[in-house]
Length: 116
Image 1 (cartoon, rainbow, N blue to C red):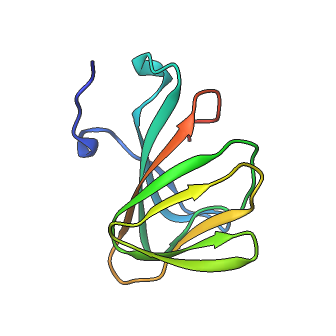
Image 2: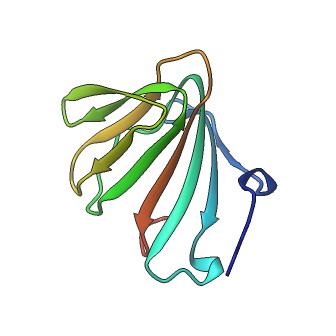
Image 3: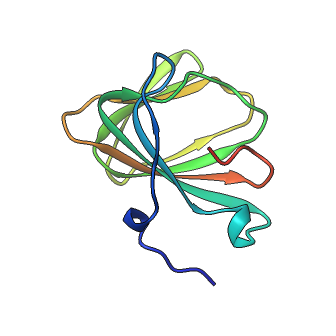
């Protein structure tokens, strides 16, 4: 068993033209013996965004706080605190912070996918 406060994990920061204003942490992953899933948390700064990308695996997200938008193929959809998002495999997607406060989201991916 592992119990951890997410702020006790050092973040990996992304700040370039592909991914901007992101602090990402693996909460539970392969190093913890998780064989089926990886749980990550992302803190996206004001005007920040993840890469626009696709991959074969699905993933699920839960918006803990903030306001943002998620690209679903060709359409941007709004998300706010308390929103759950399912992204099927092979769907182009991206997450952007559209508010003034950090956008914090939990993201679950299957094992075998890159953890960060």
